[in-house]
Length: 236
Image (cartoon, rainbow, N blue to C red; front, side, top):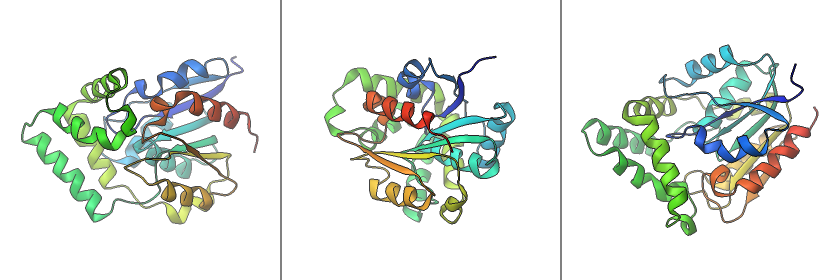
């Protein structure tokens, strides 16, 4: 039997296991990492059910952005199974009317047959730090992830996100060791909002990563790997 800690890493919208490439490599000595696919259902609760069905009895859990919405659903559904929780550039709020309209607009673009890469290019300035816009190695990975998810997967994901529940009132129920990580210039979810979420979770730690946007696992992998390794060593 492996003495490594089971670790489930949940990607964000339009993201695949490539989002966590550097964490998989860096934590392989202490963790058995698995990365679920979550573009097969259009409901956060159904996605969480599918992940829990396939998960080990006990596991550490991390989610970025949409992955964080799913992680919150999982830990609130099955608190006795989650040993550690990491929430990365995510939030507990439901979508605002403005958020919902933006998602509906993107869905309509895709349904009208507009180029899917065009949607991804529109999102890119909100995903990474401005200093990385010309980083072809990084942006090509982001475009490839979106292509791998595809148009139908994107629509299912956006539908699930739009209809998720507000979880702020339940954050106090989370009792496992929890870390909240934010890029300091996240253009999608403000660091202040993420810090507020961390403050509502008992004993959670909040960490801000400098010169970083919405995808710190790709933009600043060394910092994320260091934080994750320390987090996994915590005991409740």
